[in-house]
Length: 92
Image (cartoon, one colour):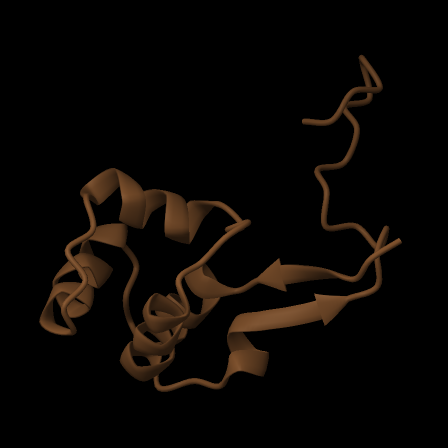
């Protein structure tokens, strides 16, 4: 199995006093990234499968954090997937 990761964008935003996805959009725009509101929401709310490295570098700059603070590598199968629902046994 290949390694997996945890995405801490929402956590790092909160550490910097940003609690809404709308806080991030103008900061990305200042750095030349014109993302739609839905794109920014998905970036914050979901774990990205693909991410432009320049957007990643902009996020690190905006949040004044390191790659390790934003992306936490974890061994495959250590709980990055949603837990099964008790009533159905299917992922949440």
